[in-house]
Image (cartoon, rainbow, N blue to C red; front, side, top):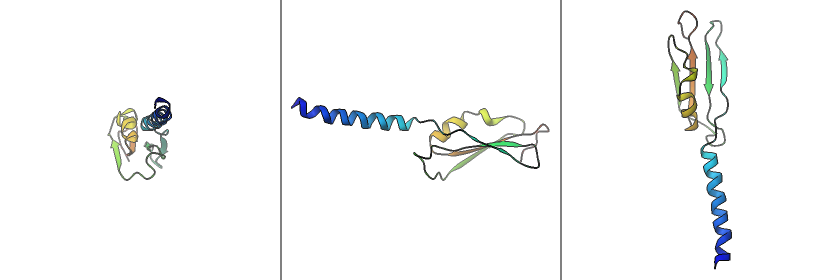
Length: 96
């Protein structure tokens, strides 16, 4: 009886570990964008294409004078399947 259950338990353990590791996968690196002709910069953070092949919701973070590229949402929201857009203000505080 124990010898029959061992392969089943090992298979379930492997499936559980693979599923768990995919759930905590890091999103791909951001895609940096230089808007022209202004000196405004931005970034797009995409979720993992394997887990979320076609994301439908995008959040855009813009602040007039602050750099929002280090906002916690840049890491956490793409892990949950959202596309994130950020914009950095230029020296005069003007955003695109």
